[in-house]
Length: 73
Image 1 (tube, one colour):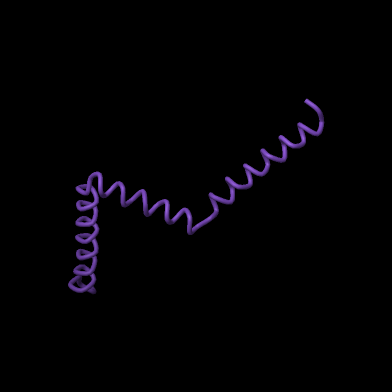
Image 2: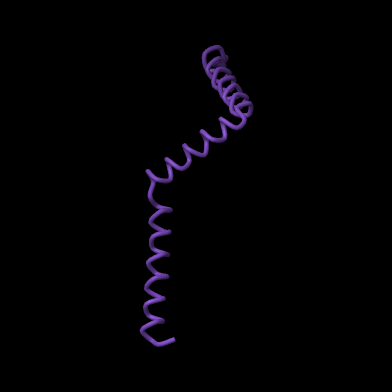
């Protein structure tokens, strides 16, 4: 392998690394990927999502009730 071949291979590896870093820091792309993953997960098994949403709703309702009806002593 010649020096020119090694340099070309190093440039190609650097370009691939930079593209991978750019993909990781691309917030809109990562958001879309996360949304797709969540949608696919919900479609496969919605029960944990329904339980989680119900639990979160109960927690928020409990905190609101505590703030409204809690004593201010």
